[in-house]
Image (cartoon, rainbow, N blue to C red; front, side, top):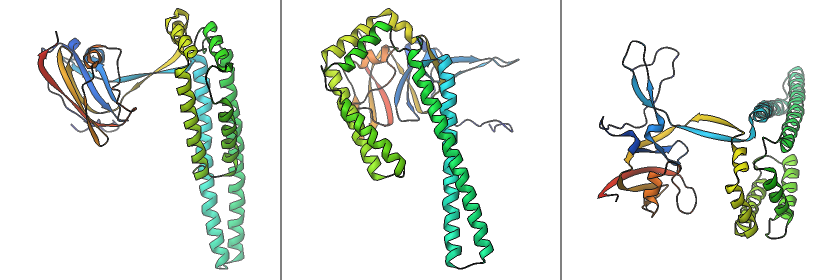
Length: 326
């Protein structure tokens, strides 16, 4: 059906036909998100009845994701505005840089061809004007970034923005200073300083800058691996998971509900043992882990985890096995 003028036309990505009497509480929806991640939702949790005036209404479903911020509502709003302001200024700065490069090329060409001196003078004036604008946006962007980072720093004193209760935050802080595991702090600090210095003097797509960023990422990974192996770190995390005050901190954070764009969907009956087949990039794998039944029945488990890290799922399907779950 064509959309009315001014309305956004929906795009169909997948179609399912099911029996009317199937119990929605026993069905799960498996889907590939737009970012190639596999997810699972209980069908009853995403169904809505859309009532139409003077009509019988129609059933539809919307898959949504809950994004929990690091900050409370008050600070999330202020930090988001500052961050968006800085990003907008960065975009305007890019436009002025591009304009300056284009004018410089035109001026160089005009000088080589020895065109009218008045035309060259006009280009020189335009180039100088664009350069001034470029500097103005750069100064504004730097100022906005300082405001943004300052606002983030202030959240450390906010009781609602704190990730865990005060006792466990103190324990985590003490662990950072302990020598129980190699946190790569000195190496990370030096490399971060190198990256910041290089950012000021080279282009964003510089190979040397990209190499340093990759090395910094590897250092972070190694630091995380060392922490995971650390018994003290694991003990603190276990205490946090069991702490009721730490759980209360999560409820104080800003929450944003966003619609999830899907590429493919299908239904699976939780009462029947099933096998899931995935096409992961160029590899076909059989998702038949021991915890597969638990994954399908447990509403808390949302994502399909792939071996050797999270990889892009190109396609997936499920096939019921005749033997019922006992």
